Length: 138
Image (cartoon, rainbow, N blue to C red):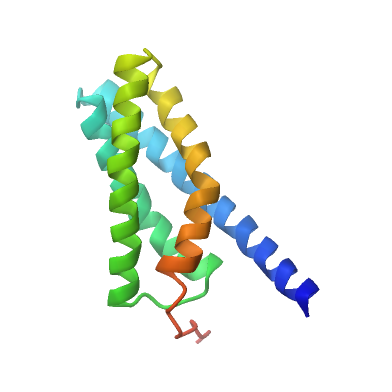
């Protein structure tokens, strides 16, 4: 039974990472477009792309990774956690770009890589854990 649970957790992590890659590509493209094309300040562009990617991530992870139907408490928990991550990541982004003179896209990618494992564990245990209504196929 432990082997089955470990396998299911590994598959869930793989699906979470796949969704993460899709969201990372979307957010990085949006970040670059907002900053480079539209001239939006990089931190504001980062916040906008972060929020849009997280809406996409919630929908995709709910469907593919955790197989749940969205609920108001689940949505609240997801965005509460991601709001916290946005604040922390924005502070780190500013320190890396303005303080360490990193390229804003590189800083964004580094933050995404650092956040991935922690984000999976936090969302698995906090955002999606108490949503007991599994999604059923029509």
